[in-house]
Image (cartoon, rainbow, N blue to C red):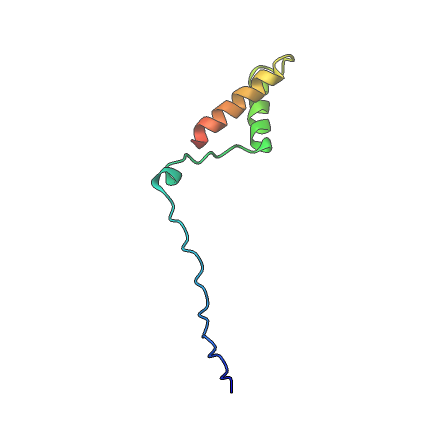
Length: 73
């Protein structure tokens, strides 16, 4: 007479251990970008300071973006 095979109890598998954050990952700089509205408001201020003269909208925008980025970092 054949005897039934003993069933092995299966243990639930553990989830793989999560990797810890390395020092390098923590050292990455956080870049905070100004919003479109913030840049537009400052560029408009620069335009007003120039007496609302035409022709430098791109310069005003880039200056505003640069200044706001410098403040955020």
